[in-house]
Length: 453
Image 1 (cartoon, rainbow, N blue to C red):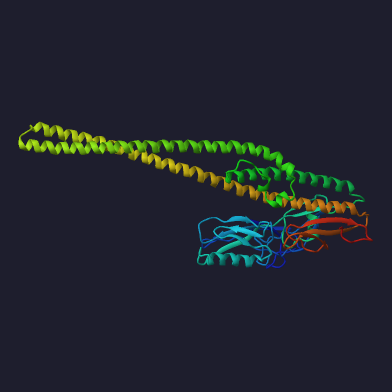
Image 2 (tube, rainbow, N blue to C red):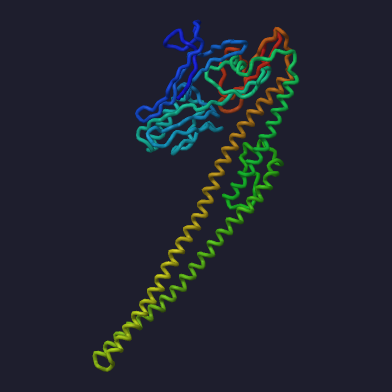
């Protein structure tokens, strides 16, 4: 069930602000399943741009655009909810990577950055058809979560806040507790800078640790015995100090040595057991050859005995004795044959076990490698965000505009650009933010209303 709060509406077709008594009214919207397909969400835009002051607190309207409109331009860092409604598998969330692609089942990476949501949905549906995976699939694609915005500067509670469509700079300041109107914020700026520097150091430590694990996994997959700096992705090496990596690489090298030794011992044990089984089969082959000769001789003896008995040269007991000897010879032959078959089955099982040992190891290593790559990608995104904020706050601290009782609020945002990079954008209070914006709020004297650079 999706629970939405709204003001009582003067217009029955739109939720809005009611001048009448009665306050808030709660509406319950039930999301249901119809004809075997999931109804994902409903879109409400009626409360766009409205803010209230109640009891001295700034209240922002809830703007719920579940999954985003079809015209929303997707960006790096957005998480998409994707579901093929024609199969039995549940939907899942997929993040748009740094290369602007999202990796989906069966079709792999699909470039989606800077494309409208509706266009991407049709593009994915067409790829499934063109690759002959589905004939005419019903695709559900929506934005599960936007990149959060970060608000800092002359606000009471700086930090990350969930992005909502149509959120303005002024509303974001309200989410951050409102502006701080004081004559000097130098101490606050210094504390924020130190906190960001500490965050950056912690992220670099996590990057070094994860990079060392990734390098070890790469070495194990390649059957190498050293953890190498060159196995770390170039994008990480560009920002990570090698000395920090080497500190974790020493521990990973020990793990590499232990795990490689264990694997090789297991493999050598299986190979020795296989060699023993092959040797036993060779011996049984020799025994079978001897038994075949004995059986052939017993058959000749039986034939000779029957001839002599028929001529009356030997008694009937000679034929009986020859028959018994043949029966015993054949029994011993088949006994050896059965042992040989058992050892061959054992050898087949050992060979399968050896193949499974190698393939399962590779599968486990590659799965863990993919998980570490995803972790590195998240850490790099976090680091980039913190570095951007640190760069802004340092520049802002240098400018440090004086505030007064008649001070004015200035807004600027560090915004990611298409194709990479970022730029500082001056905003007004009513300008809408974009997902991932880093909003800087400054208090300026009345004579200077320019945004901080």
